[in-house]
Amino acid sequence: MNWIQRKIHLYNVTFGLYMLDWWERYLFNILVVVLMWFIFYNGSKYVTDFFQRHLTVT
Image 1 (tube, rainbow, N blue to C red):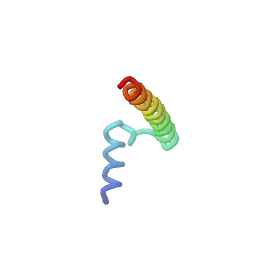
Image 2 (image 1 turned 90 degrees about the horizontal axis):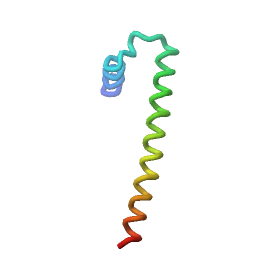
Image 3 (image 1 turned 180 degrees about the vertical axis):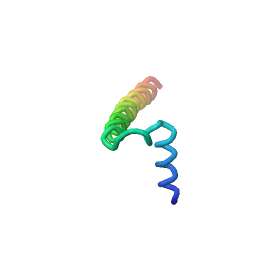
């Protein structure tokens, strides 16, 4: 078992995905990806706005 397979196994065991069907696992992973995309997208917009405001004030 290589490093990537161990991380995937740890992810499945940590969140209890090993006991779900394949389609439930895919649905959960899609929801996680969408949630992470929203967090990173809005976080990047916030950080750029923050730095633009900080640089224009100075």
